[in-house]
Length: 242
Ligand SMILES: [Mg+2]
Ligand SMILES: [Zn+2]
Image (cartoon, rainbow, N blue to C red; front, side, top):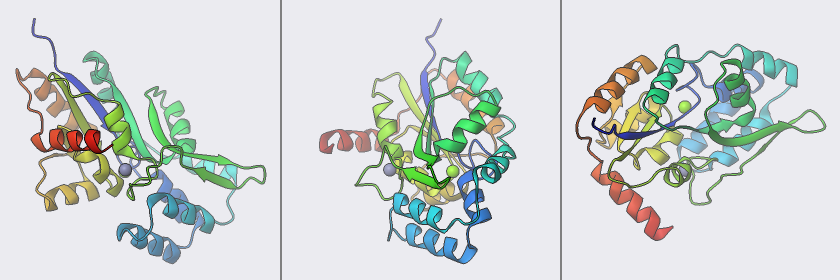
């Protein structure tokens, strides 16, 4: 029997696993749209880092409390085929790691609701003793403007360059630009798709996890998979420069 390829999946959370961006939903519910758009603009133009923008977003949130926030999180739905996708990764013994620039606070709740037990890395959010949101960035990289929780670093520390191992990234947003050029296969939609198009980086477009399931089945059945040459170079460069 041919040994199946080892595929390791790295997946964005907001707007990829969930149908809508949870962080954005919360900020827009409790914050002023004009102020929010200003902050988004500053971040998109690389004038502020992701962690700075998160702090600013939380600072402009008003009249919230834990109950109101929990009620909004409770209404968030996930991709209708995500659980089926997880079954598939179990069948193929493929590790799945979620890389999020959102908050562990809502990821925990949503994973619990849908009985999902995969590992994830994110920013840390909790309520302080005054019932105010407090955000910290345990995985920040000073060199990276794109993520408060540097996705590329987690990706590199959780994958190897063995010949029969392949890395796959699935995402939809601007912070996914950070890890995407370090993997062999990319599934993209939204802003990430636009970025990859612009830079002529190959990817599979997807609208939901059903699309991903069929392409992954197809990849697994192939005798040989190809590593992405540019990803190998990017990874080498990172290891050398640290
Ligand atoms: Mg996203
Ligand atoms: Zn990063």
